[in-house]
Amino acid sequence: MDNPHYLAIFKVVNLIPKGKVASYGQVADLAGLPGRARLTGKALGHVPESMQVNWHRVLRSNGQIAFAKGSDLAQLQIGKLQEENVAVINHRVKLKAFQWQPDMLTLLQDLEF
DNA sequence: CGAATGACCTTAG
DNA sequence: CCTAAGGCCATTC
Image 1: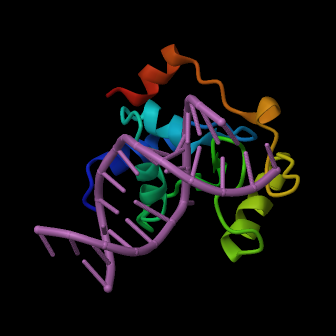
Image 2: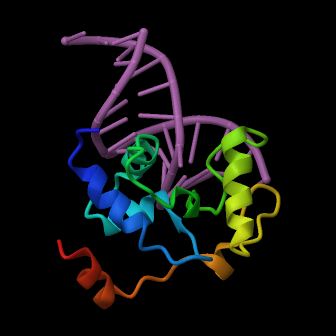
Image 3: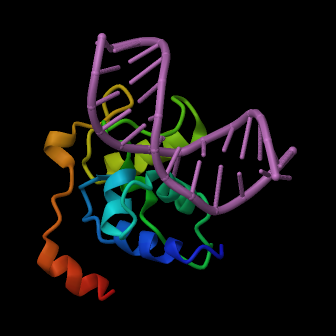
C-alpha cells in the first residue's frame, strides 16, 4: 500500500455513519479524487490489517452490492449491513432511505486536509 | 512496452 | 430492465 490517496479514502469511508451508506464515486469525490471511483475500490481491497475500515458501508452508485451475488464477500457485507438495520433486497439497498448526506462543514473539520 | 483486468460511473438508446 | 460506449487508472501479466 504505497498509493498516497489510500489514506484519504479510508478516512472518508470511516466518516460514513452507522446505518448509512455511500458509493465508491461519492467517496472518491469527498477524498479529493473526482472521477476516480475505481481507485476507491482498489483501496478498499488493500486495507492494511493494522487498520479498521468500514468498507461494508460502500456500494455502487445504484445501491447494488459490488460483489458477485452469492460470493463470500457479498454475504459478509450484507450481513454487516443488516446488523446496522440497513435492508438489502435483491442484492441492493434503497439509496433514498440510506444514502449518506454529508454535512460539508463538519466534514472539513474531521478531514483537516 | 502493450494488453487485460477490476470492490466504478454516466449518458444515451 | 438491458446494452454499448467513454471515462477513469493502478496492477498485473
